[in-house]
Image (tube, rainbow, N blue to C red; front, side, top):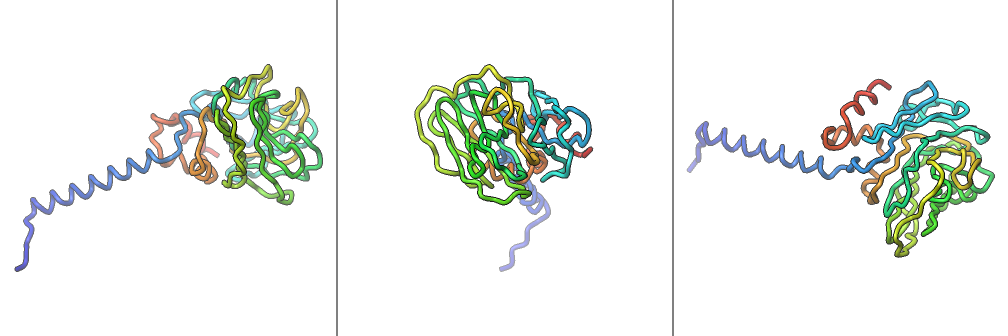
Length: 259
């Protein structure tokens, strides 16, 4: 016997189907990276000038020192540091006494020959960069973790560091190195501000990086492996999947579209 559905029933079933799709879509958004704990997202997409905007909700805009060069980035534009006297200064102590934090960045190193080449940090805690030419290291007074870096100069690679009161771990291209496990209270404090690319990261001054950096960010939370891999696809891709009023201001997307 053939069953024939009348129009009201068909409409009702269609409405249920569309509602289910909408709900599932909303749940997919929730599963994206929560950007609300970001205290600095510097895309380096301005392409000119001596300042770079922080596109997190915190507004920790940063200043370029000695004119690092605007170049093509992994996404949009990037900043290239000369290994001698260029850096980006935030003017803020963004990582004091943190129980947990995450640092992420795309890097395109030139030829690294020195030890203690800085990527991002506030001297004394935390310090993040090339502790030697083949090792990317995160150091705090409470813990330390590393990953081997064996790539040739001139290639883009993604690096990240995650630290909690239980462990520290460094990532290269989305793959985490060995966890350094230790129970601690927090990761210590510093009298220095957060710098990027030099101007003092491992030490009070210097630690100059040779190469380009793009999409640098700091979070006051410990991102997981999946979060880091999503960030590798670019912050613009994250913005298409979240409600700006819950995560970042709508201005973020508008700024990104201009570059």
